[in-house]
Length: 460
Image (cartoon, rainbow, N blue to C red; front, side):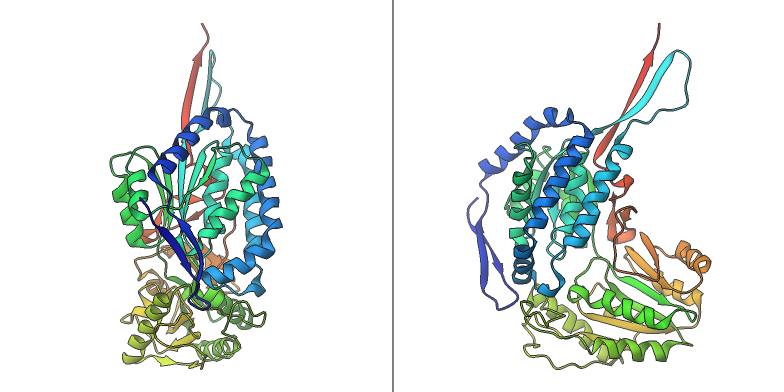
């Protein structure tokens, strides 16, 4: 296999970076090196593995000024937000702190004459196929716990954010991670499918589209590799009549439009109790109008371009379809460069929406949201569940007991109350329905990356 992969910057359409695709021999050598180093890595104490991860974190944080600018060029996030360092640090430190307890053997009740326990052993080689939208965080969710659990890791990053893989590899080099334990490979789709189907990968984690997840499942069919998938989302929010309205507005606007709406757990549809609907919509639209859309390298920009023009055109199509079916566009912001075929797209808020519109049913992954009036909790629950996806849902209320009751009836992986668009590394990250399969982070994030092994030792 030959050829190059190019990063086309959303800022100006230029080629920001270009890298050669790895040869089949290079891929084979990386897999062989990973397999060879595994026995030695398994013998390293979990606490010592944790020290490598913290040194890796320090190396990444030292690069952050450069990383922030690179992210703007690669996928359009404004430099004013400083990259992903805060959440990155929180997740790595949390997983390093959890590792020893999560990975220690389980001992059942004592039984005379026997020593019994269940050890957690590494699965082997873990492959991470990472997306571009949160290119460090989504990769780290599996890379760090995978290494902590005693595995080797191969990273195949999205073409849009190729430099992220290089930065991660360099940070591990600076941390002194043993050679062969981590490899960053630039691969074609064909090479990726071939490797997954080779039987040489023991676990694969993929974050991306539903169609992509199905392709991964087909590729590993018959290999018996385990799999973790985080796929599409259409995350709902429900604002009850007793909500602290200014708090809900401020947080839901940010949860909707941060990263130009290109967030796995970004808010994509909002249901509001009719008694506070008008006040909520007015405040939400007013705050949305304060966004500054423009070049992400400009410190005054709060909303950069989408990663690709095609993504922006998909959102434009959803907005147009909703308006044809009777939705009201409340923002209508004029932005330089906002036209078909451009990644620059102004934020939009739609009222008078319903579930016959794509914007309330299909993933948008962009700066648009529909806001719908509901009568009561029961109607809100029904509408929140009227989706093939289920990653997160947020409930905005002063009644924690009622939030928990509603949350128990919503088909989702995470229930929030009075917050959204956040991933707590102490809690498991998972989804239901077409959103995916498996779990990351928390103590449960180690389960897919380890194999239980029983020891049944009898005295004679």
